[in-house]
Amino acid sequence: MRTPAGVPTSKPYAGTQSVRRAIALLKVFSEERPEWGLSELARAARLNKTTAYRLLTALEAEGMVTRSSLTDAWRLGNGAIAMGALALRSNDLMTAARPELEALVRETGETASLEVLVGDEIVILDGIEGPSLVGASSEVGTRWPAHATSTGKVLLAAEGGPASAGRRPRRLRKLTSRTITDPARLERELDRVRARGWATAVEELENGY
Amino acid sequence: MRTPAGVPTSKPYAGTQSVRRAIALLKVFSEERPEWGLSELARAARLNKTTAYRLLTALEAEGMVTRSSLTDAWRLGNGAIAMGALALRSNDLMTAARPELEALVRETGETASLEVLVGDEIVILDGIEGPSLVGASSEVGTRWPAHATSTGKVLLAAEGGPASAGRRPRRLRKLTSRTITDPARLERELDRVRARGWATAVEELENGY
DNA sequence: AACCATTAGTTCATAATATGAACCGAATGT
DNA sequence: ACATTCGGTTCATATTATGAACTAATGGTT
Image (cartoon, rainbow over all chains, first blue to last red; front, side):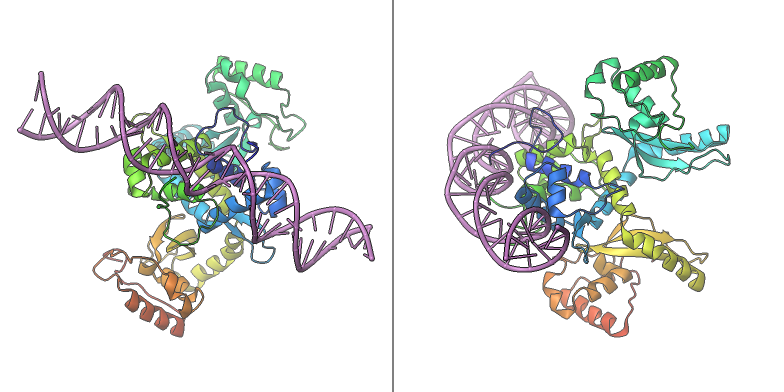
């Protein structure tokens, strides 16, 4: 055991770090890249290949990852699905928010969604389609960079006031020409959001939305 | 580090075992009991309290578990939701099976569902409600003991032929008076399933179904 | 109020366990 | 034929995970 490395760069070791490394590994999987070879995956998670291999083996044994039978590349497994679905259903917020969502849709005629902040992304927990034409269909479980969505801005703004600007998304990904990528500009935007209590995002996430 | 213990009882250590322990911990959470105190949780996972605590801390840092702000009990976190949703969407089977499901519903008029085996449980990946009265509503993500469901029997039967009887569910939980709990009887049932190509489960999972 | 039995969380000595460099053989590309 | 990749394994090393034994707080029972 020589170098520390790996895992979201935080100074104090919070809990067992092989576990943190394992989860870091899981977080490498994404919509765009759901399948990974060992070496690549290890590199992406900034882990030693051997270490990554052993972690993956453990995760595989528990069903959290599987291997595509052809490519024999690593993917998220069915265990992850089961766990996520359980987490979703045992989330109080979900059940508490449902009536609110329904009321919102009734009052505004727009699509309403329940979203939470996970790291620097928002996750759509629930959504009800309104009759309006405007509504983007909100797929439950979808993740988006928080800084490029209206709801994300609200959640970022709410999160512990202006002080917490320090631990913002490391790099603000540019998704369209209008995405806010300058940290200072984002901070100003968040101040505005805090002041008026709502946020917008126009063509900052996808062109046309 | 004195005793091995914890984790699904398997002899050869497959990969990093603190990771396996962490996942074992996550698997303790269930529909019926989504919230756990530290001591209870540790006991349920057959882990030392201190160990469980450290593992949980790591999982918390990565968003896989959270603490209910009031009770300050442990629950599955939003990270689990996000990961599960991603796993679900990046699952080829899902997209491949959708048309099949739709066809099934059209042809039979019954509810059709896509289920996979995860350990000794089946997980419902997808489902389409049919117009029939019989259909039990299939909630995506729900897990059931494989030996007590029709689909579960099929999957168990298919899984590597009669030889693999060795690594069957350790203990067959009795869910109703008709649940098959005797391993030998289950094996005979699976032989029958293999022979004829389909399975039934009548009141073996829940009374009335 | 004194008791007992819980709980969550911390400390600390111990060595078991996780670690990574170096290795292998197989594919693949040049 | 050569050079790089790849997935995977080995093995010596000491870092890191571990659990018994502690707090201190809480809640129930007498």
